[in-house]
Image 1 (tube, protein in one colour):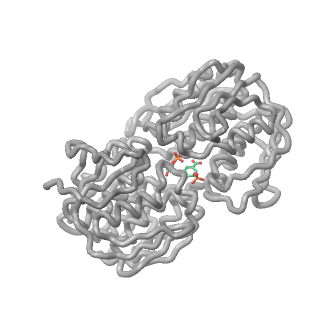
Image 2 (cartoon, rainbow, N blue to C red):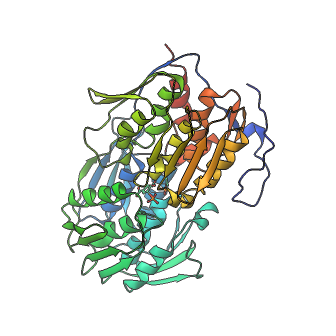
Image 3 (tube, rainbow, N blue to C red):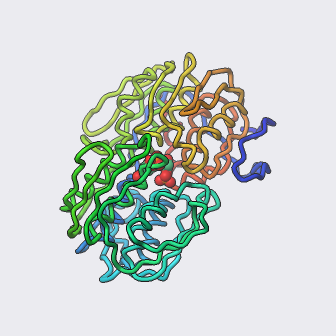
Length: 452
Ligand SMILES: O=C(O)C1=C[C@@H](OP(=O)(O)O)[C@@H](O)[C@H](O)C1
Ligand SMILES: C=C(OP(=O)(O)O)C(=O)O
């Protein structure tokens, strides 16, 4: 496959429009016919990183079975180790790497620097842990991480009486001067930029002297299922947490139990694979799909039929069939913004204009995803424009070219979806999928080769 370049200026969060070297680009494979794919996916990023934090804060050892091994989970492991948590790799079913045995530290120790990479879960979940540690912990991350909003984490810790030193920009880097304890109590925050501000505080709240009575007072709250996932994970470890009304959570002070947890496969990472059935036609079956789950990726079973798919749950698998025709949609995705890049990619190949709204906050994800999607789709000849709270996609004949990834795993996989249908799409930096799915290129090649 030849590497072709488009000359449309792209959205450039780095202020550096130098295109990546051709050598780094990955020719997106296209199938020879309808798919007949069957696969399993590695563990959920969101569950793995919650369970790692809870295991570090627990009053006894934990075992995470079939956890995710990726850049985001590795960064979380390293962060928790630097507080004194022991995390051992132990033999598991081996499919996607070892299990993790976690022994909490006797006392959490600060005096460390934590590399958050580009992981929202690390930068929003570990500062409250640092507040419980003794000594200063400095947080920093990738250049792109310094653009992600952190002011709610900083101001909420300060409101709880924790000393935090920053440069006043509400972003990384900053230093939490932990004193070994947090008084806790009442706290009002604005979590409209990310649900992770709520989850980070709830995860540590039971370890605060007075627990946590948290109220969200902003205009909207994205990603409610991710907060429900946090509440469920706490309850499974014996923490008394209630939600007396929407936007309010009460965590009683008390121990967090150690436990053995089977980590579910990552259902949000299923989005590009399932979307492929609609683009190429045929069937994609993902085994190990949980019967019930707090993962928002489960909503794909309701979302993909809107695009024209047939979806069935069969013997613990989710089976998606496409006819090769994709129906345009109008959908509010405020609960599942992380699914947006894959669904936007699908919409570029639909039979009419689509609007996906409720996702203004994804401007603060790994990159400004609305700007990045519009830039990359229009560069390949497609039609897309930003809305105040989302994106309008107007399908037009597209052509090959370089699809830029912006260090964003879901931008890279969105390009791969389009590349199933449009010849000569070359993905810049496919390696960025290692953030949550290092196996993506291999699994995608297997999917594309699975034609009947
Ligand atoms: O708590 C979590 O594990 C996540 C919450 C969501 O963040 P936002 O609320 O910032 O969208 C989601 O998009 C992200 O991928 C993971
Ligand atoms: C928004 C995402 O990640 P993060 O956990 O870094 O916020 C994502 O994975 O889509």
